Image 1 (cartoon, helix red, strand yellow):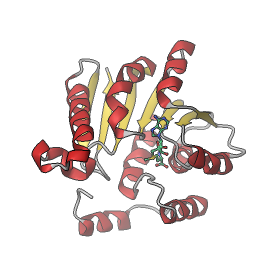
Image 2 (cartoon, helix red, strand yellow):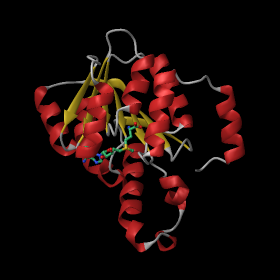
Image 3 (tube, protein in one colour):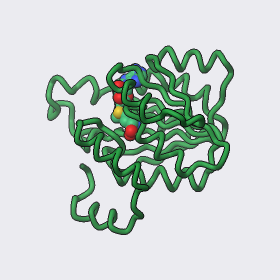
Image 4 (tube, helix red, strand yellow):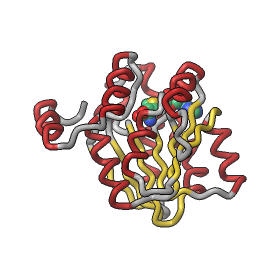
Length: 213
Ligand SMILES: C[S@@+](CC[C@H](N)C(=O)[O-])C[C@H]1O[C@@H](n2cnc3c(N)ncnc32)[C@H](O)[C@@H]1O
């Protein structure tokens, strides 16, 4: 956690309650150790969705479907979410949780492959929520930029590695150095790309919000 717990809890107290079914899904996911979007990230996503009213959202990293169902609550009528997940045990839960939701399409594949297929299909999205393997964000950026409409939003979760992104690589445990290096490279790219305007917030585990110029 980057923001002081005390401040975070106060901010939570100002925010509205989740609908019952989402609160229960959140409890279940947390009890099972599934890493779903945190409350402060939920608030920012809700704000962005209500403000931007995207019609087509792409999520990379479904887990058990919590964030997809959360986003659906605030999307305009008729808007659609496509969400990608590759891990079998997550997919099993996601299929159950997303059953009957015809405005959410679950793509059961590795994101690298799924993104290539989406680019080939000519699909475009006006919001992309990137919340999957942190070490791969950089390798997906080229495809993401092809899929994102001009004026669309790219929202990248977990990008500050709980604050350790600011540490020198020597202060990072050897096993985490690759991810630290790759995330720094990703953040450099999205803050220096001529195709994006980016702000990075210390929300949750770090949240980057980029607009496709
Ligand atoms: C942080 S969780 C997503 C949480 C979800 N967005 C939520 O808040 O409810 C990241 C998910 O991305 C999935 N994932 C990681 N790498 C992936 C890849 N290469 N292709 C597809 N899914 C991937 C993981 O299996 C995991 O379920």
